[in-house]
Length: 188
Image (cartoon, rainbow, N blue to C red; front, side, top):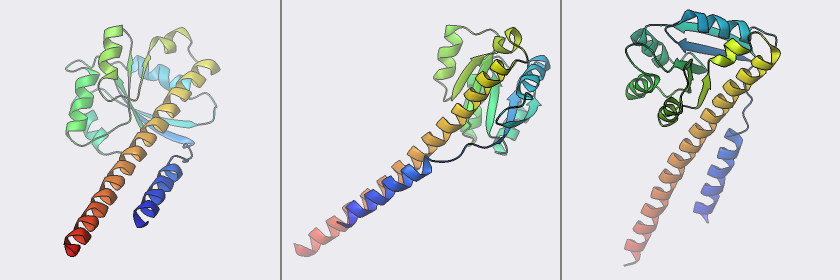
């Protein structure tokens, strides 16, 4: 009976962890070798909306990796082509060093191949930069990008909650199996 109560408590914790409010202030680190795209993003996200955005920009991959490892941002925008590496390589390097994201990839030259590669690299979102060029400084562009960012953050949190739940469930299962095994050996 204790195991059922423990499992129910874990399930309730998971449900509670999924009901988190999204922040009204979001910090973004943009890793891109083109400041023009970053300036367009800043302009679009400066439109009055539900969220206030703070955007930092870094063009140097190694410096950017260090900033990602500091874990001071809510989301990371990574340009698909960063000069010495692709976004996929950048994200893999960040993860190898212990960072987890959430990472969003954006690209000025989006192809299906880039999209597929990005989606297979633990990203939480992908969008083409031409949204900024074709629809600059409009409320609709703000709403599209804002929803992508908030969706990415929410998905990232849900994934982390699920992983934490799995770890807790595995631990409780091992405890239960050990207790059952010990009790069985006492009766033999």
